Length: 213
Image (cartoon, rainbow, N blue to C red):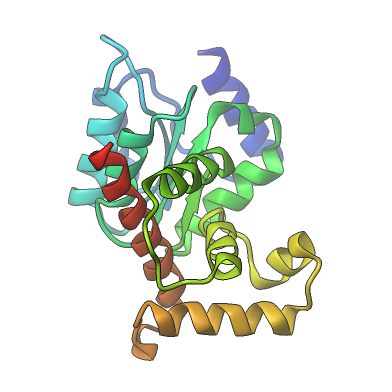
């Protein structure tokens, strides 16, 4: 309750409208049906059993209300659950560790990204997936630098932010992104959603490594 109410207060301070704050998955689904929000924040583990109620609710919202973005919070990295969420459809989905709540700007940025149809993945999960990829010894079509850029794309970073992180020019990052999309054979007709498709393709590739271990 403290985390829920504290986050609600922080979001309001950031000029976001909080339509409802609920205790369990049933209340969450009722609130979504009543308010039809732009986005919801869901804890993976909710009452009464604190196992997968939040995950099940998130998947149902993704299925029944495809226009509503879902940002899932988790206390620890839960790779299997995270991949189930991001692989449940196109964009409009995110996964963050609860510790990110301390940085309200990051949470707000993630909410805006998923509400605009993007996909946001916690940096710690990206690192875990990269480790799985290295252990799996898979041969990929992307170069090491392109994989690094794609991993940052998976965190929801813009080209400019990636350029700043890697100490490269924005033009260089644009070239890498173009190369990534071409190597992954993502059609230009996908428009702005090409980045989302690239990120999801990256995560699905890593999920196959995860299942094989």
